[in-house]
Length: 566
Image (cartoon, rainbow, N blue to C red; front, side, top):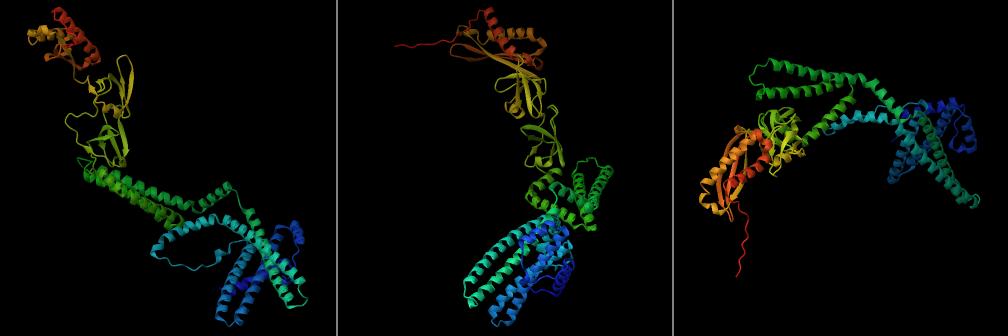
């Protein structure tokens, strides 16, 4: 890369500026005689403006050194005839030209105190359709770059300071070594001359590194004085963001909400004006779904149009990037989204008015939409709103005739498959509390309660049954007299306890001829209001039957053990 005429012009202007401010002519590399102690003394007394002038002077010295290298390389390339050597020199010349260009820009930015890059027209790059995402991200990345520009410049200057310090150290060591060798070489000889020339080259490199280190150090000190704390910097950035883009943001959000609520209001009036016998038919559902989608899509489109109209590509890119992220994530949940739409339209696996089992509890599907509602009238406060996605993967079925949503209600007596009997104190979708006789309370998760197949004793009628046996000596009357007398005694005894109107039916049947007794099955059907006395009635039947045997001189057998012997 070659130095343009504009760069040389800027360089001459910069040198003139430095001469005017410093009131001295910038020395050539050979005239430079660094005095570290003198410079340190001056730095201690100088003002900030003087420090800036010193920084500019150091940068100009570095520019002159690099410019000398460029001129030397040009002269070498003009004198060289070997194509290979010319290519190598050209590469070195390009590197030096880039270095010189950077030094000139650093000088200009230090002197002016602004970013020169803002005034340079950068060549436009053409992007194919595959790189359109880069176009979208460009304003966002530019905003982030601007927000972190000071921090990045400080980090770069710190690296430059360390790098040039190392270069200065190495160049000084090399120059000292060459100087010692030159002292012991033959006076005026070819070796001494070569060593002195090489020492001069390393002294120039040392001086260049020293100047650039000092310039980087002064620039770093200047920028660090401008750097603010994290909280103050964040507050400043937010304040700047709101002052530059606050109005655009308000316009965009206002447009989105305006379109959204406008479509919703139109939807409300349209639903009122539509005359239909069934507001939940397929056509109405499609209309509501379409209106909701239009309200969301219209709101987003209005926001994009507002940001585009105000020319705020940063906010436009943020919204568009968010939409791309949503679209990318939506690709993975597309099947679930389709199933959700089918449920909303009531054409999916779950339909309104049908039975569904959710979390182990039966429910009636009251309504389907973006928000669904499940109801169980037999549970306490059992109305459960759910987002439609929660029902994806479930299925419902029509209710059977006389099928109940739950086997019992609060206050009823139930008997579980494990033999426990109790009254239902409370039942909700989460748990069922059962109170046994005596006051002990048992809490079951609703699903576990249903798994124990509760038998409702209070709903209509229930049956108390027991088995009783008499001795074989009464075999002649075991199928005639004994069953009738037992039935009369049971009916009379139970009625005396619960009331005659509560006894629905009494049955005594000869069951079997067991090993040591003639057994009877005794069954009593009672009204559900007597369910609280279920266990008491079981014991009552045994007492009534024993009293009946005593009255009729029927012998009650006991278990016999037969021993065989030879």
